[in-house]
Length: 205
Picture 1 (cartoon, rainbow, N blue to C red):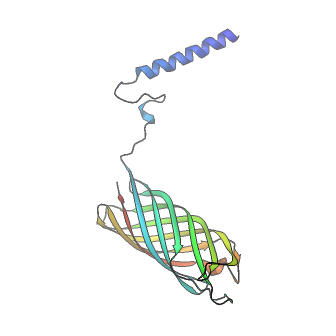
Picture 2 (cartoon, one colour):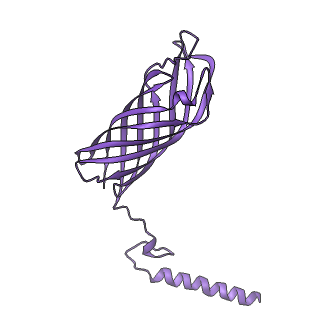
Picture 3 (cartoon, rainbow, N blue to C red):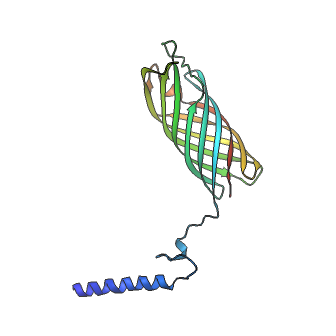
């Protein structure tokens, strides 16, 4: 029985070797043949900085977002992002004087683009990530702790092809913040509408 199994295994391996050797010499040898190769002709990439305006607990906030990713046929894009507050945010509910709030989030995004070859078209990024808020002062950390949360932000942008490698976009998104409780506010005070304006630099194909 063992000899039969060994013989069958030997014949199987010989068949694989024969298949590999039979492949064309001008392409890489693979077990699955040329159909297993990855087509990169429709694969592009980009980096997109953006400026945002929003409100958190009745206080205005300026945001900077940097994202980058890969695009497939200039329709579906996947990547990562980082988002942080630029100004000192003063929550309406905060009772301690001389402190302000910092905000940041990091995560991934998926984006669908319609009619990308048209001069003016639409794109719809969906951000999913982890966020944090913390109270600071002019010296640094105040010892008032921090709060972490899960957040999702669907967005809609109007995009303009300025150049084959540069795009301008403007639009808005809504930030949904998961369960959190920090100081005198909760997730309902951090969730909200954000206006976006930005650029996208890349190889679009």
